[in-house]
Image (cartoon, rainbow, N blue to C red; front, side, top):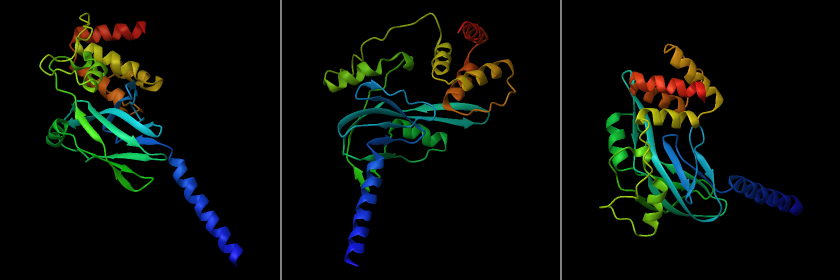
Length: 239
């Protein structure tokens, strides 16, 4: 009897250890958040990838609220300024970012101005403390900002909000809509690129893929003027 109890106890301990070990060290965010950088390295989290693997220790994660809402027949994008989050990751932690679900334009506008969330460790069942700072809002074309430079300046305590970040390379040969269409096309997989090409030829086409890349390309294509649309079509042919 004693042997059976001991074996049962060992089995329980091993199963618990296996369950916790399976988590590894991971940060998972909702699909309406974008992970931009991890320890000043580009995370490239788009589409269906909303988690990153980490190692135990101190980490800096740069992320932002990034929500697309449909209003009538149009789509509108709501983004917060990048959030610089410093957090100590425990061994075996599985961190989940808990944020309110946004379903209306009013909610999205308010949340983009003041994003709030908690970090919960599924492995330990506890909330995790962290430090959070927002980069300063800047005027002008946002996709030309060098966010990584801004983060480094913030970390060095040399960021001067009155002067703004160092100038990013200015590309005047194209307009914002064309730049964004190229950007999201380059972030897309083969199926998404094919769907975009077909949709351009037939705007009644119902794509069999659904992701943020396709939605953003369609959004910026509809915003573009006829000349920009033609330029993008030529670029696709030569791509």
